[in-house]
Image (cartoon, rainbow, N blue to C red):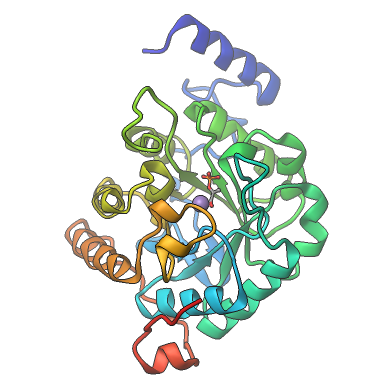
Length: 318
Ligand code: PEP
Ligand code: MN
């Protein structure tokens, strides 16, 4: 049950944002709503189907650091079964003194790496000003947790047709998250994927708290695909694998995880990145759970052509 403050907040949002409550029966204007008897929405990143029967794993480093690092990681994750490459080049860091990313140059590096690995790619956009420069290179845009309610950015992403992975703000309710998606949908872009990445709670033992119930609720309330990012949700590689398995068991559509060839050397989120062997372990666990619940992990159709492919996807130094 929500508190009066939460209720007031939600009603205000609904009046301002969409005009109808999301959790009542009459919400016909809500575009993400799953209508009676309607099948779920499938969103394609490149040629990869998200929200269909198969589970999709999106993997890559927190940040693009160099062309060698993103290339090696792309080839490795493709060979281990990921279907989409992730990596940030415009980084939203808490500290202005932390590595801010390589900007558009890193996006170009990522495009090359993704092509070599035969994967489509998703990267974060921080500002609508970067959209024209980024669009020719990316297969999908990521909106980060800190930007979920940046309505200027959401409106611009509603005007393009490339898919948007919309991360949940770490202090956002499910209603607020779905209304953020609505900004993109109402602009005419139907290709939205929701990503739960942990919310802030009293717990300090994990980086954030994975709201698995909230993610399932968003999946039930909307027709949009919902994926889980257990890397940011936990901040701990040892928790990424079990929570990835839990998300699959809960019936969600896929995972986004951070993988680095040498986690301790990563320029951002070093403490949470999966090392290559842990990523392999995760893929095995997730495949087993996926089989058990009738959601097979979709295998990469990419055709890695580089040296990592020839050696079964080993990762060299960065
Ligand atoms: C990321 O995916 O690297 C990222 C910054 O995530 P979030 O916006 O969820 O913090
Ligand atoms: Mn990160």
